[in-house]
Image 1 (cartoon, rainbow, N blue to C red):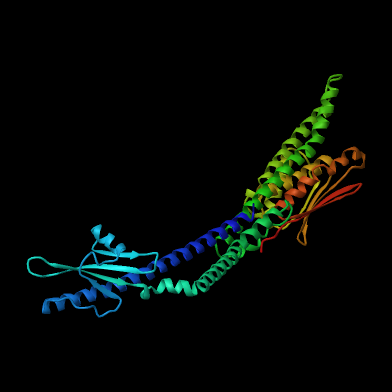
Image 2 (cartoon, one colour):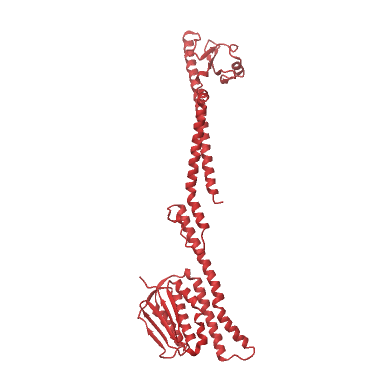
Length: 407
């Protein structure tokens, strides 16, 4: 299927070449035969003018000066094949015979009193038929040359079709060999013609399609992975409600699970739209303060449990919405796993933002949840081209974030 363009182009070029050859050959033959006829007719015309002038001066029909032309004074004297043409009423005619002669007839009326005198000029044009003789003598050579030229034209058409279609075939081969995780770099994208434009737009379209498919795949995977844990916890608590009333701690866990699900859904949708979210220069300290104020208003930390070592202005490159989700999730995890009495320390040094919190060893049963949500946090950081690392210990937990700084 992918070679049909080349075959079709070669067939079109070859057919056009053969058609041009046949048309010019036919035109050359027509011009040759017309030239022969015009030459004989011009000889008859000149001889007729000379006979008319001689008859006007002397009153007699002179013998033609050209030995190829004869004058007949009556129809009966004409050869039978010519006589039949005259009987049919033709005054000028070209007559071929199987026996060899090739006649050209011209009727001439000479003024002679009240009744013009009619004579017939008849030329045997066999010696002047150069085209027929040429084809008879060197026809084989001419046919061989013509076939050779046609073969050369077909070869050029074949090479030209290969040269014109080769970039499209290379592009088609590269498209067939693409995989979803392979970087798209078509070799024809630097061409300054329609094929280059096609390769560039096709590469962009396929890259966008792969990106959309990857985000859809990641969204489907993360929905099943990230929501399973809170849903399982909530399902277990609700299952116990059939046998006993829910305690305050159970209600708190349900509310925490709902918040966890809402946050996870927000993150998943933000990552699914990450390609369409613009990048900007933002103040990361402002995002941190906004998130901390929300937690402090909720009474999440006691006074004196929060330590900040941040510059007055922390400019980074990223997306404000994703940055807020990243900070909110890190602080939310610190609160959930560390507890209300844990100490939280945020510091920025050497391009690294560190968020650390203490962990009560008595809460070991909840520290296993540290791994929950790390994949989403990594995806948020990757979407903004940031780096993130997690360091879990028995009494402390730390997250290191390396944001992208403005140039």
